[in-house]
Length: 156
Image (tube, rainbow, N blue to C red; front, side, top):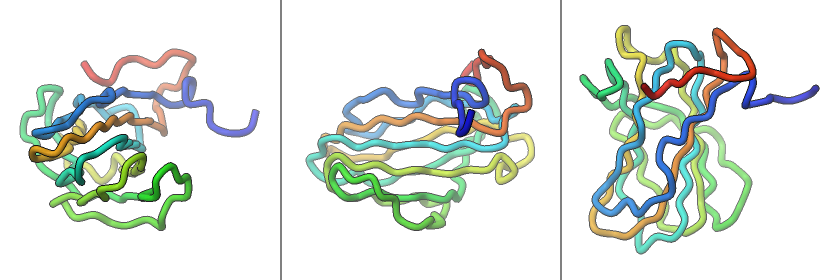
């Protein structure tokens, strides 16, 4: 086989099912204890206007304790229904301000080594005011310490 069989050598986490993020939403907290890398895909469907920020937090447990915003790398596809990502951009802990276009997506890359000691948990936060924006997010974890055809949960 060529390629990457996500179901067997990675792990998929449904961080934020498609939802209206008016007022802002946070995704499920997930653990990177047994994974070396996280790829987070944020999709934006229909939006009345751009939401305010994409922020990534490191936490000390599943409850989100000690949440602190961290820098990350992002690749952007801000052209409606496009599939060509931009070059990597390093984002400060203050977060990334997304485009107001509909039907776009972002790919966030985070190495587990970038997390602070004692903070192996990660949470995505999409901040927003009163603009109606439909968005979703999924994390694909890779670099598993214990790969197999069924991986254990990372969200509880």
